[in-house]
Image 1 (cartoon, rainbow over the protein chains, first blue to last red):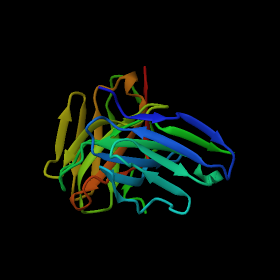
Image 2 (cartoon, rainbow over the protein chains, first blue to last red):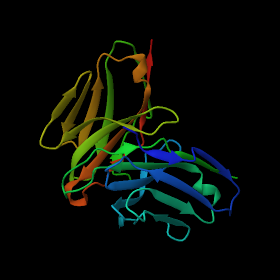
Image 3 (cartoon, chains in turn brown, orange):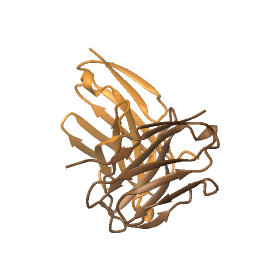
Image 4 (tube, rainbow over the protein chains, first blue to last red):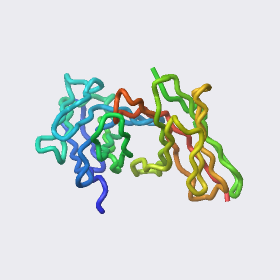
Length: 117
Length: 113
């Protein structure tokens, strides 16, 4: 079974440039997460989707970040324009999702390491 | 505000000995806890979990202990092996927020051969 796929693995851009990350979750997983991980820190949730609906985007800096999951499968996270402080690893994860109160293990992709110069 | 804390950034253990990784949390609504393991340049992988209705869960060499009154959990690895060298993250979730997990800052474990 294929795991969570992310691309690109590495991205180097200059500040003020746009950048996009792509994630394909495990087949059948309804819940998709985007996390930000700074060096020496744990993953921090940016946005969570249940199918195509963003159910938690409270931590997403909406002035420059946007995300979509149009068909409830793969997802794109965009930053425009990028700032120096956006340099980090962007992780995508997926889980079966479903019932309130039912916990599901999250499967993570390898992440995209973004460097903003 | 960090709701899940791992106060030891690193830990070194001799091969064959026990590794004990600690995690503290502040939110009394958390009722499900997980440990993830992360190798460099890879995403975290699930290791073991525990529900608040239990105080211990064991899976092979890995055991997680939960002390709800102290809001503390720990991961025991015994015996430790060089392949266990990785960063370990503790994560917690509350039933009211469903599948939202809060992660600690991680502990880097080095098992010395």
